Image (cartoon, rainbow, N blue to C red; front, top):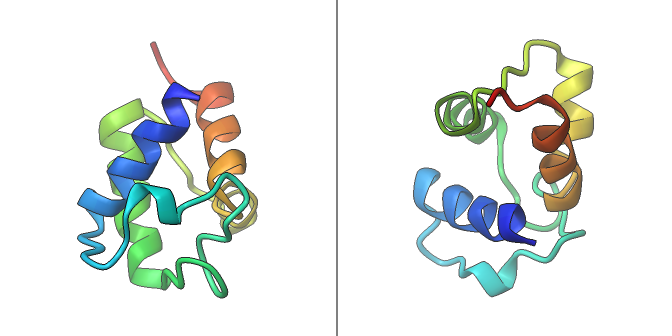
Length: 84
């Protein structure tokens, strides 16, 4: 659960989501569309934040689509791909 809490803070602070609190982001809350309503610019910023914070690169659209589905899928993707 530690990584998911880190991601909540990273998303809110990194994307400057002023009206969102960590409690608003459930493990299954969609990050795009319904849910947090992030857009394509947020996706680009999130890719950069993940590279900086965890050494994780997302280069393919299909990989991004799956990883960014919700907080749990993002956490799982980072765990599987982060560099130590």
